[in-house]
Structure formats: structure tokens, C-alpha cells
Amino acid sequence: MKSFLLAAGLALTATVGLAETAVTYTVDQDYDDVTFGLESAITDRGLVIDAVSHVGAMLERTKEDVGSDVTIFTRAEVYSFCSAALSRKVMEADPMNLQFCPYGIFVMQKPGDAQTTIGYRAMPDGPMKEVQMMLDEIVKEAIGE
Image (tube, rainbow, N blue to C red; front, top):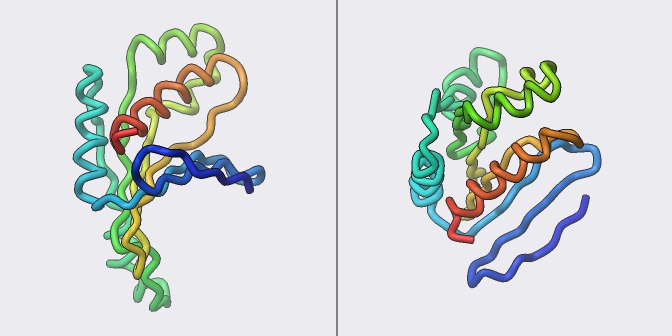
């Protein structure tokens, strides 16, 4: 796993795992500040948030039902949205790029950890790298990078 520290006046780590398919940034920022920044970064581009999946709350609510007592996240959400212009461009290049839409950015905080992690799925080479560039710009804007 490659990990490096980016200078921005705050503790920020970007990680892209070889076996993993996610790009993440971990910051010393309050979870609510990161999600507010994310919502603003998405909507300021004229994009609409289709859904916010409250994954952390669902896992916590159902842990006993599935025979677990482990709290995985203090909070964890996935924000889903799409860009009509960019989606059309990448799907005209390859209709199979449909599988990546809507785009998602996740925010999470683990128990006992004051840091917040924000990230997205790494996109495959080719036209989808333009989507990855957009996702990275949104995430960096959300955390003030």
C-alpha cells in the first residue's frame, strides 16, 4: 500500500492500495465539517446528490441481528451523484461505463479515532480517469486541500 503525507497545514494522508480500489484522504477534521464540505463541493458544481446512504447507522442497527457485537464505524455515509455531461462523455466512449454511475464518495470515522476519512473508488484507465479526476477535485475541495 502506498501512502504519502500531503502538506496543507493539516494531517492529510492519501492512500491508493494495490489490491484495493479506493483513493482515500484522512484528515484531522470533524466529521460534520467534512460532510458539509463534501455537500458544498458537489452542489457548487451544479450536481445533485441523488442519495446519502447511512451505511454506518445501518451496520450498527443490524449488528446484533447478524450475530455481531462489533462497531465498525462511529459514522459512515456514501454520497451518490452523477454528472450528466461527464457521464454522457464516458458512456459514449464505452457504454459499459454505465456500471460506475452514479458516482460515490464515502466519509467515515472509526471508533476511537478522531480523524475522518473521505474517499472514492479508483476508476479504470481510459475515459473513466476523467471521472476520477472530478471525484478527486471534489474530495480535495471538501477538505480544503
